[in-house]
Image (cartoon, rainbow, N blue to C red; front, side):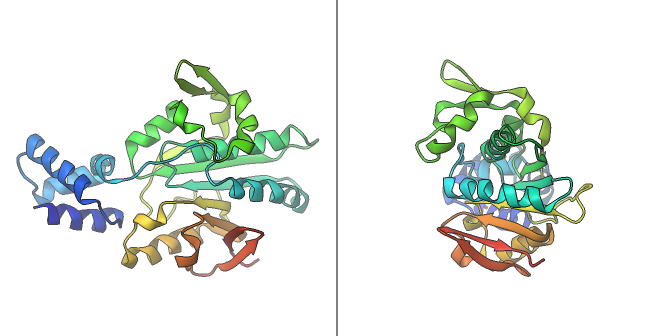
Length: 261
């Protein structure tokens, strides 16, 4: 019966599944419902219950710091090219939210050094409702701050309160972030963001999708970028990705995709 769950995971989420995770979900289904009928599978996949068993949620602050250096370098040119800078960023497959908060911390640090601060908004989503709940709460363990990305940790200091073995995000940092549940197999909900995002961060998640669904995922992301917008993927993922309508580029050690102007 685990094959049925694997097929459902690919159909609903587009992902390859770990046999151990499939077994855990299978055992839970047997204990909770005593069966794996199509109706039950539809219920647990559409509600996000299945995602809590089958998705990987590894994340921490300022992971892959070269991407944050790249964003920081581009902020002045973005500011100068707009009469009223209004930056729109998407953090796709955000897991527990560290990436979205890291982006906000960086922009806030930049804004403190300039006369006319950049207005910004970050949309951050994941398929797993449980991790989105964690992101909204903004409470993290000490492993969320690691050596990788430590050059940016000073940006986090004003917004992280340490209590025992936990960090709590300062509530003001959440003002410009919208966390929500979304499935990457579906088009991104561009609510009031015409013509799209300036940046989409989609990092270290592409590897979990099946080959036949990767094109669909990248098409959904590409469609949500504005002209001139940037798509940043995990360092190990960029070579195998071919987003439609985007050009592969690099700046130093950072490889990325950009929609033509």
